[in-house]
Amino acid sequence: AQSVTQPDIHITVSEGASLELRCNYSYGATPYLFWYVQSPGQGLQLLLKYFSGDTLVQGIKGFEAEFKRSQSSFNLRKPSVHWSDAAEYFCAVGENYGQNFVFGPGTRLSVLP
Amino acid sequence: DGGITQSPKYLFRKEGQNVTLSCEQNLNHDAMYWYRQDPGQGLRLIYYSQIVNDFQKGDIAEGYSVSREKKESFPLTVTSAQKNPTAFYLCASSIVTGTPGFGYTFGSGTRLTVV
Image (cartoon, rainbow over all chains, first blue to last red; front, side, top):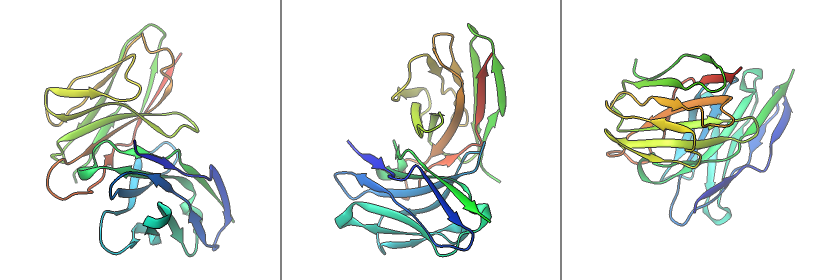
């Protein structure tokens, strides 16, 4: 069965600092991988996705993620964090056509002024 | 603009009552999903439906029921059998044919509180 782990429950960074959120997955075939962001009391918004091709994918709000098959990882990065990036971030792995996703437990990001 | 509408945003229920959460989408998506979110536990799948008049139990279906009479609508009923219904409920939808790896589109959620 597929699974997703996000080792960091809570990360705090200073505004302007770089960010990396970790995601590891377990899946038998080539996975479809996603990062979502959730602001308090809101739904989830898709940041970026990977399903084939270039292993470095660009998303919205200046985020990028790199798929590393050898490490079963799909880490999310941003070179310079803004205060508005404070939110909860979820990594997800899905089968074809986005059916029956498995979500990681989430990483809460706090940003210091 | 297309999207998913969940209503109401906040809902209060007395113990022993059933309550229905609404989810409507105008994205022409085939599949719809209900998730429950509790602090520190991520998202847990309650029910999902890939076509009209058909739905499947997810990981935590006990105490919940759904219907899918129209492609656009997937209401969730939280029954009195659900022992701990206070949570944030998220509805999502996706395509099941065409471009792969499309992902989910989420509604803005309903926060249910039992009083």
